[in-house]
Length: 273
Length: 273
View 1 (cartoon, each protein chain N blue to C red):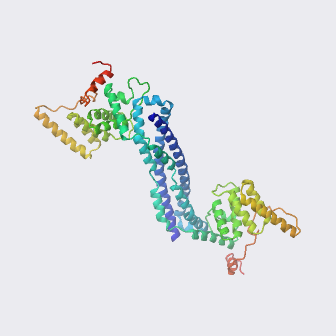
View 2 (cartoon, one colour):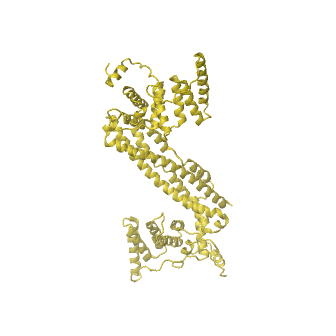
View 3 (cartoon, rainbow over the protein chains, first blue to last red):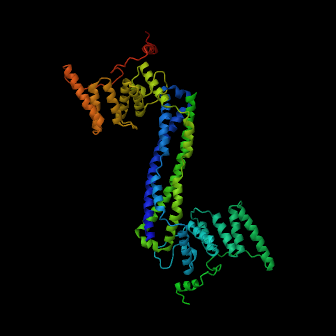
């Protein structure tokens, strides 16, 4: 199938990348050896320029370096060992999945999560029913899942995946995405789920890391005022956010627009009707 | 003076080159870490493509890699950390010595050689009268000196400097220029000085290293026929080339077109008239 072909394409690209790395390393080694030679030379020439140039051989060699050798070095620096790899990836790009395919794959995972009622943690550890091998989701994968949900205004799943990203970051996993970015999406999605105390707590946590984050500062004042008003309307006292981590059932999943979906999911779980 | 400025320009270029090297190394480290990660991934995916894709998390991650991560890597590979260095060298190039300056400096060294009757070996070791520090000439420097003389049809100096280049190559010095190139210039210059037996010997030496060198093969036949004819005309037997290395006095330096030059040189040596 198409995806199987892509697996072999990817392997070919890795080999092409390895060739680029090898070529770039040998170019860099040549440039470094020139730089080391020139370091020693310029240390000698600048420590006593008049004395250096007083020797006619030095004057000749300086002329020769500037007239030919630096130009040769410049040509070496301008060499582009990446051409092969770039043309290789350009040729294959037409067969790559596009944005819609990638979003579709993320949404398929979330449907699977709903069907089997899997929490994001088990999911991120690759433990899916009926799967022998496991495949891990990194912080950046979880963030991407959460962002896909967020962009579809699906805050229920956005909360689940941003919280999983945060959990993995908190446990020390290295990631491209920052804690501030995760907290930014997570706090706003929690607010959208109607949980003001937790939205306030998460926004405060963001501001501890980055106190200059203007939008978060504005959000915090807005959330606090809103909560204040709600509490006084309902004549209630402030209660701090729950310390329980968010789980599948913490917020209720909005009804799907496809009415047959819940039936289908129950059948998949073998629950009958 | 102008040359003193160039010494500082050269130091600045070395620093700029060091910055390029640092940037290129950190780019390469990032590319290598991606390649290592992908090596492990593609080893797993290609060993059992169906099994790999059977796990929905793997399918999602393959999509994501091809849709976004490979594109990010491509942007990284396309980054050009050499821009700063290249613009730096371009700015300074207008003040660099040109071909004529470099040739002039080489010819000045040869005038000095004639004046003080210095053999090329002492010269290459930087031992010049009145100089405290020494400055070495490499194989490539000697070759460049010889070529400068050769291009001016000054075969007397071409022989002296090509032989010095050959001597340093024979003693194991690393060089950009090849022994074949040096022997090519040297044998032809020796022929121009009228020493057929030595031209034949040097051309044979070249052909031992590169038997497919067509011009050298043609030269050898030409030199051998010419020597044969000269010997039979003069009723002489063949004598092999002298085993003595070529020295300052081996061939006589052609008369200079400036008649006062020899007088000037003798005065410089303190010989009086």
